Amino acid sequence: MPVGSVQAVESAEEGFALPPDAPLPFLELESPPPDGPPGEPSAKSGEAAVEALLRAGALCLEGKAEAMVTPPVHKNSFRLAGYSWEGQTQLLGKLGGTPRYGMLACSGSLRVLPVTRHMGIREALNKLDAAMVARGLRIAHEAARGVLGLDSPRIALAGMNPHAGEEGAFGDEEARILIPGMDKAREEWGFETEGPAVPDVVFREAADGKWDVVVALYHDQAFIPLRMLDRAQAHTVLVGSPILRTSPMHGPACDLAGTGRADCEPFAHAVKKAMGYVHLPCFSSPTRETATSS
Image (cartoon, rainbow, N blue to C red; front, top):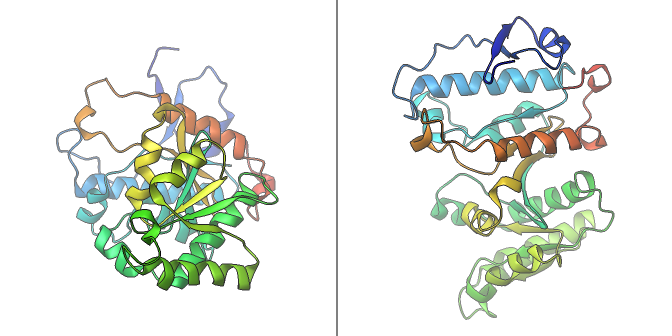
């Protein structure tokens, strides 16, 4: 089969029934194709991305597919198309119909769950309260038990301020927001969490194996340490949802669109991780038993 050979199919079932050496099957979208330069955010790109996400998510929920793997999407394309979702995690989380969901980002021994995701840092820090922190801790503990298969996960909450506030010398958010959030998670659900931990130490400790998951407070606190590690062996997984979705841990690389220089290894790694997660009970859906393996 020639490299890059593809063929249109009418349904997922038709695509899954093809032999392994057949051209790669794809489902046509109803959205009009983008007509701008490659890599340029546009409303049409956003419409196509949303349609693809919704259709793939529906296939998973209906048991016609066991997992979905998403490439990165330019968030501005969502907005140009008129959608208010902050990203793919929020869209798929709500599609899954579960009360809480999150994004577990993994690279080697370092696994991080951000409490807030794609929003401005000022907005993220202003939104954080004890209830939101407790909810993030609950998602992290449940994900560690479900996705990582750990009975007693070691989970640490990163502090917000330098030196985790150093007893109020550099801010009171640790005492006013984070510790009450940890107390709430322990009292209501029995989840014990260490912290608030010094942010510029805890991620190194986790990468060395001391912690199973670090709960970060905002996007860049989570992803800067992750991106210092091997990008080809990094992925994110949607947790708290019946939809099994993985994704490579990189952005849309608009500058590489159409050049033929994009690296496929991170996406291939995300596919392999999805295949490994398929049989976990936490990703079961009401119709999973009828699904065709992807």
